[in-house]
Figure 1 (cartoon, rainbow, N blue to C red):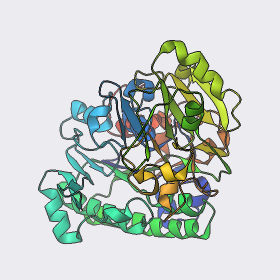
Figure 2: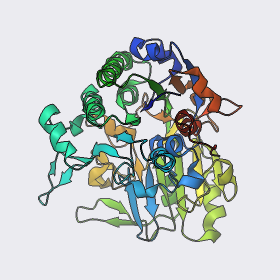
Figure 3: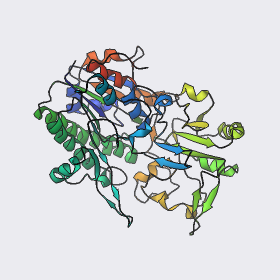
Figure 4: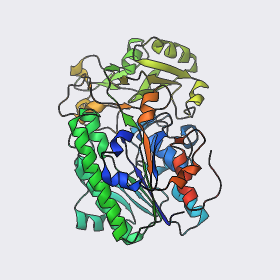
Length: 445
């Protein structure tokens, strides 16, 4: 067992990429690089919850990158607060075993309010005039002021959208090193999103994606060196893919299908732009890359809704009832119907048929207040109905075996893999690997 453990969450990392990253490869000299099988749905928030709880979405409740809060009839994408996770996470289990096992959580989703000892995550201040001020939620509260004074503000504009680049990941790394020197956490969980940007905007095999490998590797090297300088040398290093990224060539529009069937309710604003009324709709789709939760108000409509997509050219599988349990998404927060796209297709949330009636956020990077996520937002002035042929995420081990084979886990200690299952390493094994390193007894299932 190592005295410390560091888990790097690296979306888009593939086995073929590791050989082009000398600092990351060096971590595995005494360890290994092995395939990592993501659980469905293989997108950021569910996979991060899988890795930190050791259970799948039907138990921790994170069924997508967004939620439909039925009691409020509200949609929220990229929820910031930790109370959406319904299972204990690594840092809680470490505390239960030994309060001296402290944890630092740096920039993963759902970090605000987590029970870790030290936290840093984006939390811009929304001003009354509609503007935003740069800020981060930190624990302890005064930490962000210290980080800002030494590193400058977290560059939120480079964290997501058209301007996303290495600057945000560099700030995450540099601030994590500051935290390591100040707090000496026994466990660190650090989100390094940089590979995701170029791969989505330009394609996973583009020159820009190759450049991103070198940029991220340099940042990882600086992180390793910084932890060593902080006196944190006896470390189990883990770097886990959240998912792989593949090219796509077609797009499906579940909400347009529901609209044409008369199940979607829209309201026009003062400018004639169409807004989705989720409370009044008999059925509507919250889409997330290559899957979608379709929420059906009347259970009697479920067979009809499912039938609408059975022969859709972009749909691989239509799940209802107990079939959702096979894919680990039979949860109260899930849609009554779950759609899985074909391997080279993705879903767009659009419900409008005329671009002139698109809602105002359709061409912006405001991803928090609409029922879905759209890779188009990564492009500058991309027409709302365009298909980004080189950009979307392929998610999941069910129905997309090629993408699952791309995901990877890098470990600095081969012995740590003994905690994985007999059928290889899954994302839910990551929590078990970390806990076993600290002697936490018992296995999660």
